[in-house]
Image 1 (tube, rainbow, N blue to C red):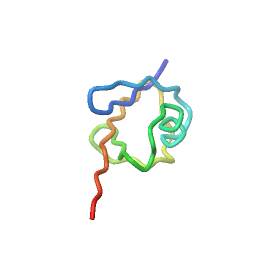
Image 2: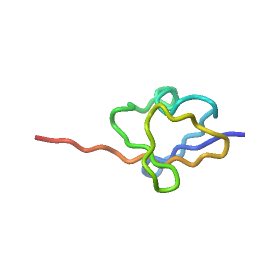
Image 3: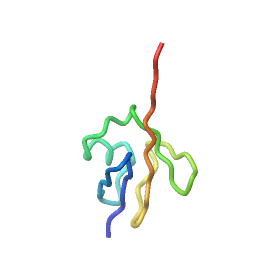
Length: 64
């Protein structure tokens, strides 16, 4: 089974069992550029990705 990241209009299939941070890096996504949510709840980047997870990524916008 796989899990999925959703970022804007893209879907990334990821392997369960690794941390969100590791999965982001393997997908080519800069971990510090997004916030991860599962079922509408914010999760940390050390959270383990589980089978069938659907994790929505929200782009972080900063400026000064």
